[in-house]
Amino acid sequence: DTEVTQTPKHLVMGMTNKKSLKCEQHMGHRAMYWYKQKAKKPPELMFVYSYEKLSINESVPSRFSPECPNSSLLNLHLHALQPEDSALYLCASRGQGAHGYTFGSGTRLTVV
Amino acid sequence: AQSVTQLDSQVPVFEEAPVELRCNYSSSVSVYLFWYVQYPNQGLQLLLKYLSGSTLVESINGFEAEFNKSQTSFHLRKPSVHISDTAEYFCAVEMNTGFQKLVFGTGTRLLVSP
Image 1 (cartoon, each protein chain N blue to C red):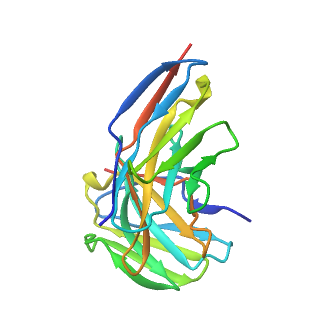
Image 2: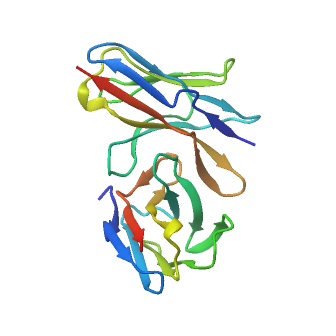
């Protein structure tokens, strides 16, 4: 298995809702990432987990809450989002040595 | 610090013509460089990467990139493009500040027309 799987592919949520994005990989990668990509912009790093510990938080608002329950799974919990948080959320994992990052196909989030 | 510059936001080209997408980086240490492609409404796909060794790297679909340390460049080239190559192309550099992370350039939209 050489893929990163993200669910759901699309999500529409209201500003008072609570939802979660899920990311899964079975490549044995110990570093996992959340990126946010607005339309016509490059991906911007949000969080980095290394060996299930949060290593980097790029000053992301607390309405985004990451979680890494185990080495294969990465979640992003969403609460009280704003319409400007609408974007494509990409998950990635990185293996040792090969310096290769594998990206999922993303979750397209719309906040109404 | 490391950063990536893609000067061309959009490159229009006719089918079967050659193309070059430019990428320059700034770094004071050894770098690992990547090109990713993003088709409409999809995630990122790794096109090719430079880690060390041969400065010319190739992908399976005809793209190639050359690492030029003196010019701090990693331009992407293809001798003959297809309509299906229409996509957004991102150059990226791996930063290592204790933890590795990818930093992307602003992207170049390749528009291939018949």
